[in-house]
Image (cartoon, rainbow, N blue to C red; front, side, top):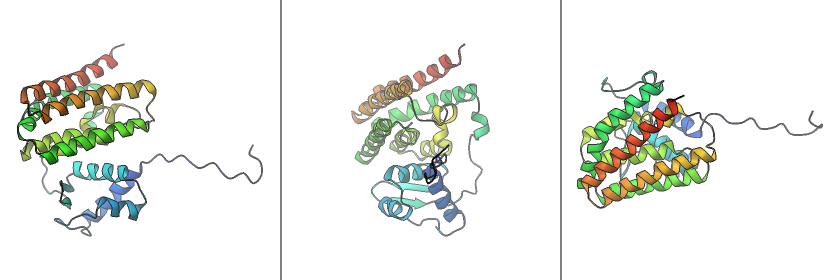
Length: 243
């Protein structure tokens, strides 16, 4: 029993701050307070208004982008797209509930993102490379804080799609959102332990190899690096399923 006058223990916050920010901005977009084509406030303005970190703001913007509510133009800003009226291609959460579903998603990604990496190596711009580098640095920073880095992982792959300069790759990856990251569906939402952090560092080492190939404008190496990265992810999941 606590001694009299002892302040109550703060209740552990279970809902990420980024989701609160997504809900707020998403509601403003859906009800028209933020109109299609309108530019969102700067990251610094959002940080000041909502009292959150830059990492939280970037994660929220990444989720809004995955929901196709906003679109970021590097060096210009983030703009409201507005709720889509088209059905379009999508994979709902209920189709990614099992390990088999996630492996099927990885097979789709191997087919699509392997060629996207090759095109990115041929067509990437300095702005694309800078955005990829920022995502990888954010990934490493998240690991240093014991976090899972799902948002940074998605941003890296999404930027590769953008670097193809082909809107169809961007639309497909954007429609899938963070669901393309297997651990976003299968791993428990808990602080990463030492073993899991070691695994994530191997994942980011694969990202670095992919980045190097794209930076070197080597489409064959980029294609091979992406295939290796996604095939390794698929095999990790298959091994986890074995008794």
